[in-house]
Image (cartoon, rainbow, N blue to C red; front, side):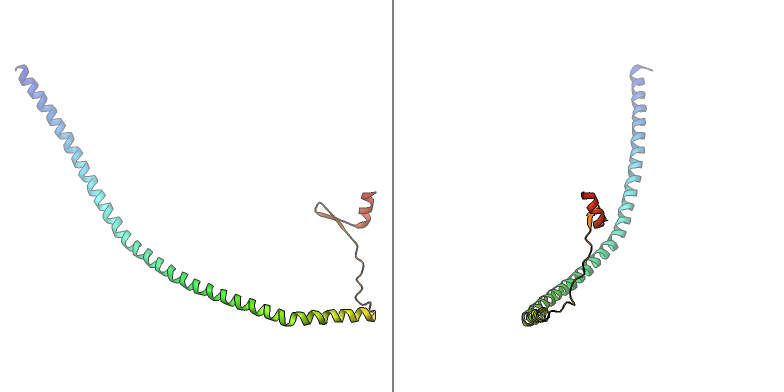
Length: 142
């Protein structure tokens, strides 16, 4: 055998090894592509119903928000009406009631009634979250 024949055999062997590695790599790539295709198909099968459910939920939420908006506007109208009624009642009855109360107080004072004399209550001082009676307070000052 000559050097050219040995070199040819070596090139043929390396070529066969290279083709074998490429064949194995292509086979694994084909398996990966099949698994990816299967995964995409499963995700699509699950995503379509989920998107339909999400769309239904969003429509329902929009309907509920429209209802809440209507309720809020009704509440705002009722509040405005109640405020107007309150100011009307206050302006209609407030002045005369104050005058009657003042008149009654004046009559009681004029007649000299002492029924409403307030009783003297003991004063207390608050010191850092506790109450000290007046007698102890005098001791602390002096």
